Length: 101
Length: 186
Image (cartoon, rainbow over all chains, first blue to last red; front, top):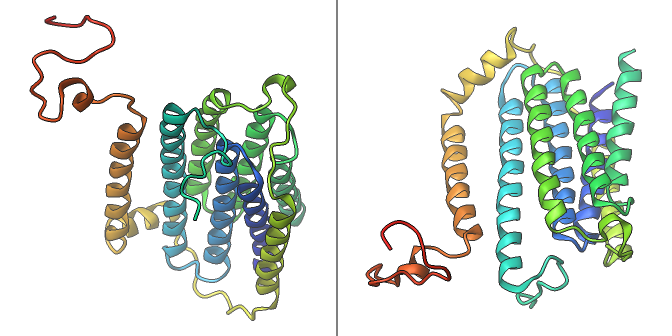
């Protein structure tokens, strides 16, 4: 158990989350991918705090920020999903393409 | 012992996370994601952050239950009755994800990390609380304002009809424009 092992696991979580967020058609599944990605960030922050700078509290504060970001992402994401579904009966990312450049 | 626990939790977190996008049931996906989160919380607990580890466990359990409600609302392929592809652009995404993993893991393994500096505070929860209430006060206030903005924003987004739809732009309509009559004073 060392910093490198923790960071490789965190990198795997970020990559899997990124893959999910990019491939999923359902908006709910897309958000699961984003959550998984942020989960990797939490693990990375905890590892950096423990193995490099345990004397400070910055690593812990970073985890608090990421956990809050996950809650905000869930709430805002589902509010947007509800709004777009009510307006256009859309629950898939492919259909919600009116902002495509 | 510690190494074995680390390996088990690490494998569970990554495999369960990957299975989230392999199973064709969104209900199973939700609970696999919860399993992945719990394994990560276990890894965080292994670094000695008891308070944050427990916060992650509690928050993720509640969050996945809330997510299950929305998952049922917007379910694709309910009960396996409508088999369909839930993916798009799989190959490009796999390349991007693999590249990201190689870059991040390569960086983690190749960088010459500095040695560990200092020792953890005796009471980590106390240290975090004191930090948030002194040096990191700006962070805490920003989080609070952001959460409040989220509450307002989500209510505005999720509300189908607000008072301006019912009573006009100046809120002075003699009678509210509702689909069904009723309510107090009408």
